[in-house]
Amino acid sequence: MQPLPYPIGTPGVPWGASEISAWLARQQRQRSYADEVMSIIDRLRDRFDVIQYGQLDYPPDTYPLYALRSRDGREDRPVALITGGVHGYETSGVHGALRFADRHAAEYAGRVDLVIVPCVSPWGYERIHRWNPRAVDPNRAFRPGSPAPESAALMALVAPFADRVRVHIDLHETTDTDESEFRPALAARDGRAFAPGSIPDGFYLVDDTESPQPGFQEAVIREVSRVTHIAPADDRGELIGSPMVAPGVIRYALRSLGLCAGMTNAVYRTTTEVYPDSPRTTPDQCNEAQAVAVRAALDYALEH
Image (cartoon, one colour):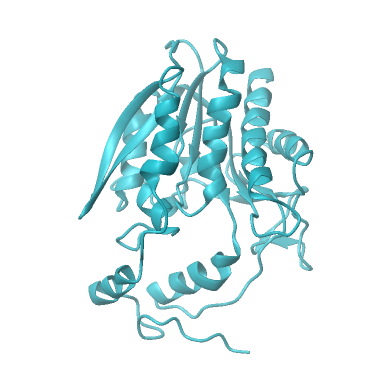
């Protein structure tokens, strides 16, 4: 069955300003960044240096951007960068990062300097959306002259210590709405035909094609498998259209695609993907899987 055309735009014609305005008019606030994210950050102020590294001005709304940093940071110590909510609708990325900060960060004191950015895209968090209000995907915009203020602000934060980043784990989800809303919207925005795909049932990782670290990815998968199930390959041996190179692992060209996990030269880097819509998991398990993935990544990087 041929999928129905996306309700905005003309099939085959990329969006212009009027289509973006029509799309933006459909977006409604569904939850509160202040109540659900900033309030938790405030409770962590006695344990971290809380840095406001920027502000998003999307009238009539403004969103302060926050990072949590180790209080005992030293310039001769490696940095671990943990990012969540690059796609604001991916809930466990945000709350998994905050869970790690609250429950586990103290285990790494004196061994690695932590920089935790739990919600890169608060406008998207509130509207449960992948894009920002300009219909730009921040996770394709980590490059010079970025069109996404969310991405530009994070790159500016990291720039002074980018050479010290040894491990970067970027926390994401793949949801059913990727297939029902976000991929159709992307095709419509770019004037392309939408080709239906499938959603992997379980947790998986995205390694870097240009600098793969199979042992690192395997270590993260092994620990997460104790918390939630790992996504199997589809009938073609793929996950979301990419060959599965190891159980639960695919590879993308992180830097050339403008992905968050490719923004530094960290030796160890990965993007997590949790499937929160699976009947085999719960929101709490998804948050825990993200926190466990961070711990496994840090443990491996410190050991090696």
